[in-house]
Amino acid sequence: MPESDADLRARIVTGAIEAYRAADFHTVGPAEVAAHAEVAEAEVRRVYPLWDILVVAVMDRWNNGSRRALWVVAERSGAVAYLRARLEAGMDDPALVRLRVALLSAASTPEHPAAGWFRSQYTRSFEDVTLALVRDVVAGREPRGASPRHAAEQLVALYEGLQLQSLLREDAEPLAGFDRAVARMRAGWAAVGATV
Image 1 (cartoon, rainbow, N blue to C red):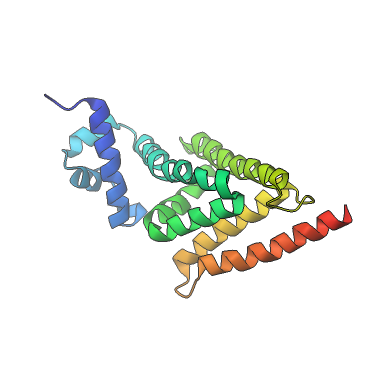
Image 2: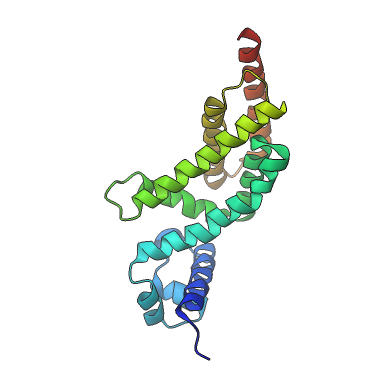
């Protein structure tokens, strides 16, 4: 029985993820994806006639899949533990971090065909962290005086900055840096709460 287009798309996305794991973002094209997916390049071009649609499918499966899989950490242990788990997952799969960093410029370019999707995904991810922090304050995991929105800005900036450093600095220790910075942030949040 011939492979359906839905199955073919799924196989191509898997192949694209493997291609991005094996090579730099800027060197991966339809030929590399086809080789990793073990399909003809013409099939890649047929089911993904626009390259940006394939990149969106890759990010949806790879990045959002990781985000969804780790959300249970936020539910159980809070926003800080969730972002730390995501940071650790990125260390285990640096190709995903490289791809995500490479695509941030696309999200900031209004003319990019997928800019709206990338921006909405980024906003959703930020709102997830804010919501988790609201729950953390209510549950007593974070200080009462902590502003969930401001805390989310700090935590997301820390997470993203450490991800970038992990790619560019050989001596980077992202998890230790995260733990040190979070301890200082929490002290600041508690101090603000004490003066409210």
